[in-house]
Image 1 (cartoon, rainbow, N blue to C red):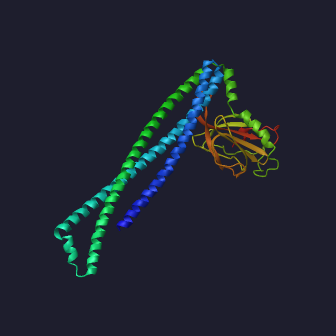
Image 2: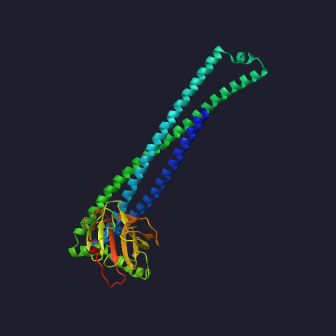
Image 3: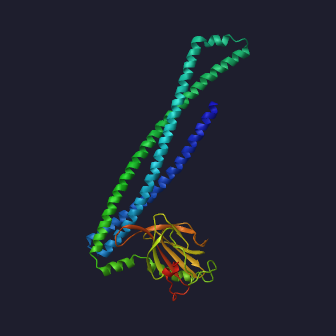
Length: 374
């Protein structure tokens, strides 16, 4: 019975250790992501310091600050995730410590009871008398074996208590370190939030010195339209004769927005800027084939291109993708997750994608507004 109980304890502790190991691995991965973002921000801060020292134009400073704000927001999101995981690990460590302490208490009480029983037996029935009162050599050998077994069992119990005490001490030390790490991470998060507010204030101040025309030019430069249009020229060559989603045409209307729960912020010809909540799913508006997935080296976001016959739709500024190049997707199928972006006017963070629709011929202009009309 004791063997079964000990086996259950060992298996339970092993399961907890495996879970903890997986959680620790995730935290280490999170640390690497955070370290990369911190390096990017440090580089951007040095560049910005050079721009300010050289009294560069407000446009250059806003460009630099916008990248810094984007990366700082990403850092805040990743740090928040790390805090959540550290909090979970602290809670798990507290549970392990409670279980180990409880098991230690039970074992110690068991050993104390065994010691009391051994003392009572020694007082009222001397071991030698017990052995020599045997009726045969076989019974004597049996009684000696029993006494040895009882002694060995008590020693095993004591060794197990010593082992668990070591585990309890190690768990307490690990818990203390995790609590310290959690507190330090929370302090870093508060600091990053303060510096983000400072960046936003500096960007707004720089924008206020620019004319309306300069602000308009800056907005255009920081949008995806020009890059998307250039990419489409190359992709048109790759989709001649594509059959996936071939029923799509210039007359196709009443399609769902590509952001679940999203809304159109503005239309601009064949483009639509669609906002949504953090973590919102981005879906294909029609069945088709993934013909390309690109990653923007500046903001680290993804652009996905889907061919519907020889028509193309583009979905820019995704924070993550859930499809692969060459895959066939259905209407409404999730292709990724909405990404964050800095609003160039308010310098506040928002979540949006830039959607585009393109006909087989560049001479044919489509309207994104007509596409989503109901």
